[in-house]
Image (tube, rainbow, N blue to C red):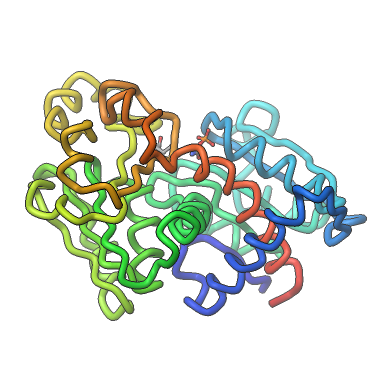
Length: 304
Ligand code: CP
Ligand code: NVA
């Protein structure tokens, strides 16, 4: 079976660091107009069950920059749910293309696809995880803070897919991670169990004020993830004190970098002035999706 990237812990810490170093190199070389042919003659299928801006564009451009071609599939232009099962779809598609990138609702769908696909499958977000975001985030932290090991990483908000993946990858690489969420919206027990034994600690808290001071990174994400629209009103009330504000950034200190995977709902989970402030690393994170995913694709296609 081909090596897939369904969760951020599918790579060893050494492999993640090697991919991040490759991403750093390609980011620098891209400015010099470097041309690569790693995916020459190869096709990549990108499949989306949910909408996307950053992931769709960064994968499409990334594949093209490596010399490959993209086939775009969605729930609307396939026969899934109309007589075709995901496992059969993955098996057939892997007879045509060399790499599968999929954004789905259920993490189990990715496991089913990877079980029958004969090519690598990359998780482009599920309800449970967002491991490509995690790679780009750690890349940005290393650029801004200068390291990942020992970094104090404070996540404020919903214990969702982004909190899980970026929290686990940062902890795997030695960061001290705190995820601060209201009761009922904490990281799932399974994610906390996966954090056991990692190099850094992942601690779940309720009140961010306990740990904000001295944070190197303050991270947040939307209160209403894709698929949770019906809960929007209730969630806005529950999360109202889990907003990254100017006051919170000042409390953290001048060393703190503010992060958000985007898209952001300004004045809900983050103040607009913080997004555009001098301590924002948000735009670097978004750009790094391209570089980190190119490095990930090179790694998986090398047959590692
Ligand atoms: N951060 C992120 O994955 O953005 P998209 O949903 O636009 O791809
Ligand atoms: N938690 C968000 C992330 C979007 C990139 C969602 O799943 O909608």
